[in-house]
Image (cartoon, rainbow, N blue to C red; front, side, top):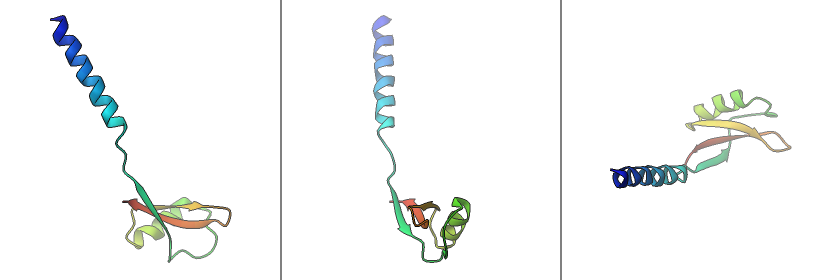
Length: 71
């Protein structure tokens, strides 16, 4: 009985460690439709969704809107 429990726990730990290492890559592209300085991630994301991206956020010292999507 102890051997089955040990094997079960070991299997669950391996599964947990494997799932931690899997992450989707996120690609970014500067928005073509956003004009002016970007101060609101929400406004940026809205413009990016109209450009067929999944979201967007403001970045950099020059406050540009960058659209995001899974690669």
